[in-house]
Length: 195
Image 1: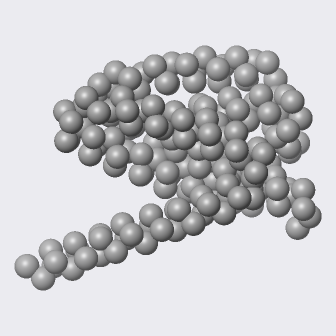
Image 2 (image 1 turned 90 degrees about the horizontal axis):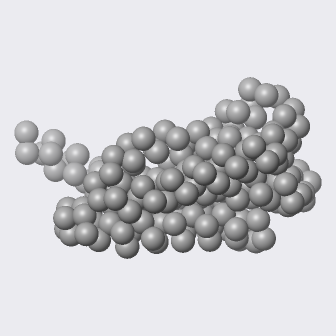
């Protein structure tokens, strides 16, 4: 794989993972970057660089950010945004994949891009649920602000230091899966042992 293709895939992974924090922030950043020629979209995805896409993603970003500051609406949004994050992550990675086979391109985008978005979204949902439980929703604004910052920061850094961001994301997701996977196995073992 050529150096440009590796960098494009790394950018796609970083932006896909960012979709787990906020669905539309990475889409807006990708659109603006595509318009500026920084985000190397493949053939068929040039619409991302158009003004209609930038306007739509900008509007959706503003609505999404504001909605996360409304207590308990934010928890409802997590239900809606989880499949949207997976879809956005899939789209962003697929848009840069230098694969000729359309089927293979979309499957790879779904597994890697959608998977990265789902893993980050899972951590985000768990953090908000814990905040809602322990602070009765009053701490959710702090969580939301952190997620906004993470979405913008990861999205922008993915464009300028993509390889570092992609490696960090893969390591964090692996750590998250191992940590919580062990807890689930331990919990299941305890439950089965009590029967």
